[in-house]
Image (cartoon, rainbow, N blue to C red; front, side, top):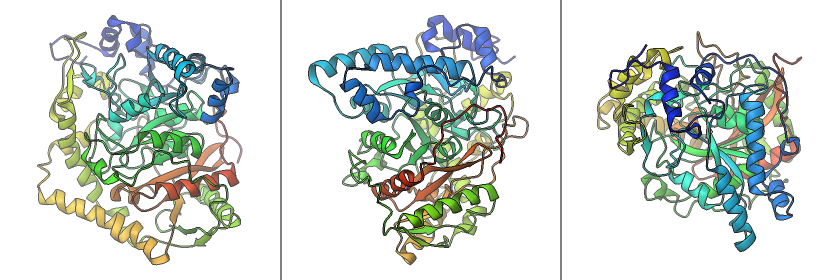
Length: 564
């Protein structure tokens, strides 16, 4: 067994069991004793049923649907919170056992009741008033919930204040229902990880085929939205962590321009690429959530660039005829060809775009596509940033007075040491090679770093998205978001075939995933990407495609693949 900082032997069960001493509210709702917590963190159990859970009227409900019910007096926010909690109990903790919600908010019912009273006496704050949302467990909340990035190492400290995006959700009247599981440390601990697994939360499962992977790192957020455990959720992305799980779990995901949404109070990887964005079942709902988040934040210098470029309402341009006359490029080189199944679905999506009046430029390849597919520059930037940005974030944490026996970590080196001393709990399936590579890096003034950063911006922007959009005068680019979900494999790690998120990631540009179809019961998504600050245009195009295709299908929690 590993040792904690005080030298007391502590396995996973006892480690998390100590967290329960202050009250079950600090733990996921299934973890009512140390044994239950240990069970949650082993390989995912076989589904006990294919139940769709209680409150079927919530399936595929939109924000507008829920607001209409509350306005008419047929529903309250408190009732809505309780119904979603019951669905989490039935579907996430039992039944299919999706394991997407790492923790419920013990204050959610009180917050909802207060918002109900405010609705009666003062009216509503806006479209999110009383709406329950989930947020990823790397987004700080200074309340009775934890913020751990899925790691046991952060159980000994707490955030001193809410992340800005959490503050803005609360100010908009949303109810933070709980925290979602994720790929631990946003999938930046090891190159051999299994997406959706964390030391604290265990393995999240794909709601379409339970043996298959949910992708990451925002696995729990996308799964919870897809399974109707909430109406919307927040994820974070450095490269693919919003759009990949949204594609694989059949929901909409918006990865905004870096600087449109604040990263203050979010466990970081890279200040150059990190961003916070929404998951929802519809483009409209995702746009509503984005409007609540966007704007300048003094706590995050990158958001200064959003001044005059952000919007409080991204639904204003929604138009079912929004594809008519739009010039859309098909980015084929390196983004097609790795999955015949994904290619077939996207070819059908292209036909829909053409039928709806879009002007297709096909192909519209990025000049830098092949260079990006082989360049080590992005990983070099992320490793340098991780070391510096993690230390800056950890310095904002404060000791957990309720658990002084648990260690605090302040640097990446201390995180590495913690994992080594808790190998049985934290490194059950994979190691921390990326952490170790990052720790070996120097400062952000090193030539290796500055040259890699310049290369990323050139490949993604000037010789990537900007170049092809300039050449063909495009409104957007499209590509398959990725291939079908793979079987979860804790022995060998993830089996990625390919993805299209890198250009937007390294340039800091926006990208939106929309469900496009499925193969063998596994969802496939299409990505719309464009220049910096082009969210309004991309949302308009994505919405028009969504309305024409109606490709999203609710999950059925299958034990195996559907027929071809």
